[in-house]
Length: 534
Image 1 (cartoon, rainbow, N blue to C red):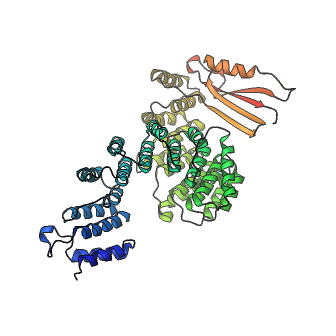
Image 2: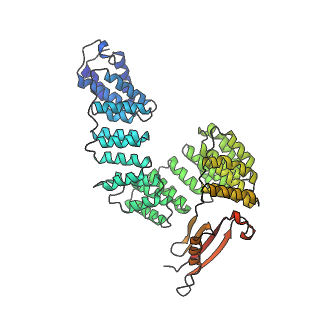
Image 3: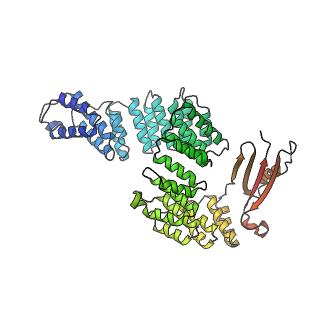
């Protein structure tokens, strides 16, 4: 069946948003010989604008499809080049977006076509190319594409900022952000999310506090995630203020905003608030269930987490099973955890990954079944990473198995040779068993490799403005540590006895008097500070 080119163009345009009818029209175009090379066309050359329109719509439709959409789009583009159809500015945005799953050389080839046709200055195309190279991890190419654009708009700036943040170039991203005259809410959200993703939740909160644009839902989700992961004790207060802001708007909780609130309250140990937020989410997607189950598992309510898993109303995913296995590990429910692990693929269609295997190793290690934990690692279809070996090393120290700890330490230190905590755990395992010669050898390796254990410091608040505790772990021999602790301990009662300072000291392993000088280890000082109610 042959139609005029105008009829084909109208037909393709009419079904541009309907994938299945458009695929049938595409099949008719193939059978009519529309995609034959220009030298083999059985009809006169058609007008170029109609041909370009047909190809543009077909490429955009192929780019929207999942799976091999990128390959189909690039094949259509190659056929377009063999026709009397000149690709224009409407051809490339959808084409570039579809290239992410393909090898990098496909993007380079399309980029060459852009340069050849003088379209590098188009902001839509430039933004799409920046995002493409960002997904490929090529930061230098991303910056090059951005620099080639003579007049980048704000959307292109947002794209390059997102690219820099996602590839760890947070310093360059901040310089770009502060050079902008009028950043919009997308720009602010991109920077906040980038700071959070690169491990700077405190700075992400400070950036949010200085934000001049009105935050949208994505901004609030990022800010709540920063509150959940921030070390500052006041972060939970900001999280509550954001929750009040959401309530004042009068809108119902979306699945993503509700999930962020549940995650924030769960990581801060406020289970009652987490339950209340979860109950008020009208459409509970799997992410909301995951956050609530993990909150229960990490706050001593493992049994309730298992009950919630059995009551889940959506299909669980990989993250759900990690949360449930975490509950089994922390609650000592080894039988239930092993049953779930063995049934993951069969019952839920989830192939066990590194996170699931790590949870099982941690679960067996906590229960003292170290040999079974080692068998799980040996049976893994992929090499165990440092988190899995670290879980087994911690279990070896917990149950006093220094021999297995020495075996586990070999691959673990090979993966994290500069991680002071791993050496400290092995040293502690030897010290707990009185193996001072081995402990001295590990200590010598740390000093020879210039490996240092970072001093730990944590704050705990029982009531805001009433009581707090700081736990400081450091080496006794450090003068700064002695001066700091001495300054705290010399404080006396003030304000008519309403504020007092007390201290207690606990040493890990055996007493200092029993330790040889060569194995000098860290100690923990806990200073409890009680101050007057505001």
